[in-house]
Amino acid sequence: MRLDKILANQGFGSRKDVKKYIKKGKVQIDGKTIKDSSFHVDPKESEIVVNGQVLDYRDYIYIMMNKPKGVISATEDHVETCVTDLLDKFYRPFSLFPVGRLDKDTVGLLLLTNDGELAHRLLSPQKHVEKTYEAHIEGYVTDQDVEAFKQGVELDDGYVTKPADLIIAEAGDISYVRVVITEGKFHQIKRMFASLGHKVVELERLQMGSLVLDDQLERGDYRELTEEEIQQLQAH
Image 1 (tube, rainbow, N blue to C red):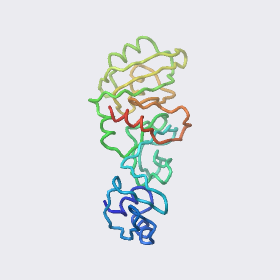
Image 2 (image 1 turned 60 degrees about the vertical axis):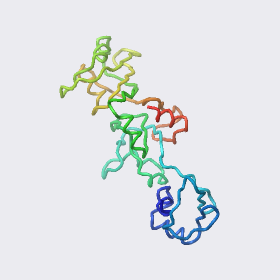
Image 3 (image 1 turned 90 degrees about the horizontal axis):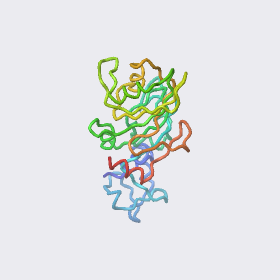
Image 4 (image 1 turned 30 degrees about the vertical axis):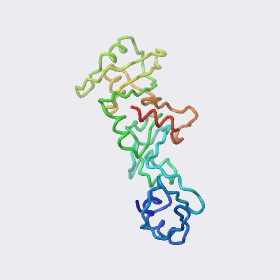
């Protein structure tokens, strides 16, 4: 891989910026200063030192975000704030994208990565990856609703969802529930409850597959996944 491409992909600036950096002799490969930006090197086999710092090369980045309200699950929008806008500019060269979507007013766990293969596996209907949510529901949620979720709910467009788990934590004028689904249709949980005569007031995703929202993350905060978390996700 070309040296300038490696450095640009690792967040050291644009290809143009990186070429100037290399030309100034600030990059060493296996102890030798390289001033040719087109120099080919395997970043996994050779030690690349940039301005005295050893490059920690990574093909993929995995980030857990506690998504706040008012932000859309997209990479670019001319009007709305996107989840990628919340990331440090260091991550821009990696072309990160959200794995699945959370509605603008839905909060909680969101995975961002540039690993397309992993994203496909996590979102594939054939994989049946569970997604767990907590919700506040307007009105009493009953055992009949629980049974309806277990059987699959017919949505407004005629689609019948796959069986889902609905656990009632507290029933009342505002009911507190937990929902586990294995698919991700547009506004699915809101539409499931709407089909049963209920309105979702608040919705938070807590878990996706093996990945559990870090309760130390405030809304809008994020962190990179640990090696253990990455390995568990890749096992899906």
